Image (cartoon, rainbow, N blue to C red):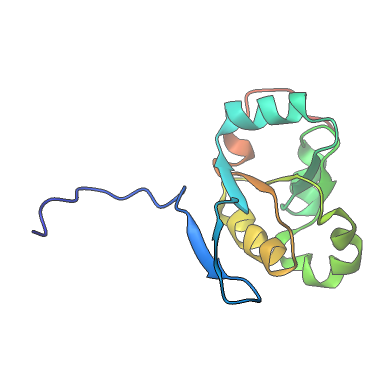
Length: 133
């Protein structure tokens, strides 16, 4: 039987939990949505309320960033959490250079109650659009 499943995409799984009364409830909300460059650009263009977090270093940010991105280095999230939490009920797009640091940042945001995160998993290296300095 082991040869029947070739791959399993877990990105859209429905999860179940029990509410306070012990009843099963369905939770199919995605906390993190991985998006490619083109999807990220469309989300940015269509959502003027979107918050964008650049998880790179200050030097990388200064070399060019997505318009209106807020610099939040991934390793400084906890020390800036009071500032960051003001956005926890908003949709946020997160990116770094290649997707590695933003993966860590996404986990920290989820741990701090963020509920709608777009993760530009390919990083700014693949960005083909204008950058701002």
